[in-house]
Image (tube, rainbow, N blue to C red; front, side, top):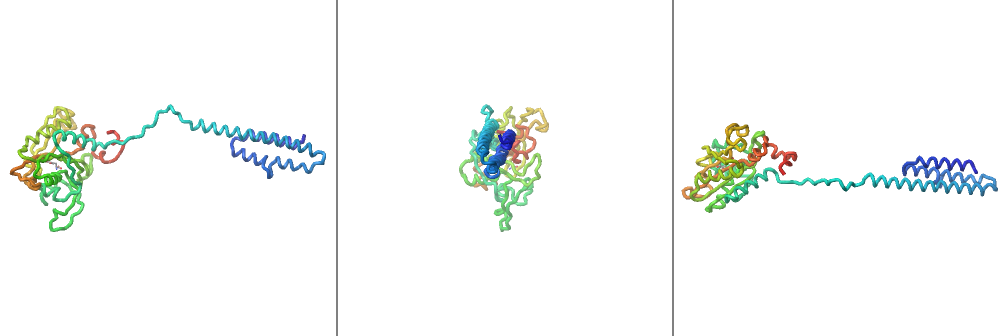
Length: 351
Ligand code: DAH
């Protein structure tokens, strides 16, 4: 045998066993089997330098080495391919026994839930839902509700003004974000007059306030309005009683205090017995035993007239309350800023 051929075969096979990936295999192939400059090709070329009678034996030996080396290459290539396939199959295998990942579903906002509960409570008492605009005129928000310009009661509502055109009649043109849902009262009356009315008006209200744990510059209110013949204060108290009882449950004891609002006469505030301590006194009711439910009263004759109703023939009651408060009590939410802060860690708790 020829020594150079033996060495070539030994080296090639030894190196091949160390080849671990396709890249190394390709480098090995170029080194030994490449037509141009491959070690095997070079060895065959030396044939021409041998004496004529040695050439057939050398040629045969070279062919044998070539066959061995090529077969080893094919085997290695196949082994690497099989290993790669195996790794892919086992590496990214799907474990079908794993529990699925539940897609996170959205749900209604806590305020929307509260509003719907309120619609249901009032629907049982025959109240329809009426929508009024968020952007109002000064007149609707104040003037027509018996709060003329420069009336000191305007101090009760810090206002976001949208525009304040200098026109001959500033009350007509000045636009604002409604500070309460009460302007809707005038809109329903003007639309329905002289029909009797029984509506609730839900909506977002805006106040130019310092934001704190207790006050946001936007929040929801719900207004109630009933207009007809022979509507009395006892009808109002009965309605508020039924509402508080359905919303808060418990004994449903209601207390009424005299108050003042420019658009009602007389005006009252209604409290329900504290649902947490049942009237004994606790931190939530500030040790009074009572929770404030709503501001209310008999619709002021001026307001009735502004709505188109003759106050000598018709009477009515109205009430208004904040929508977030009941859910704050129910879930012990101590900070109103969570409601519209859009933090899903908060909102997601009320699905
Ligand atoms: N609009 C009042 C407020 O924002 C609440 C209110 C009080 C509404 C008495 C009424 C009412 O309809 O009669 O503070």
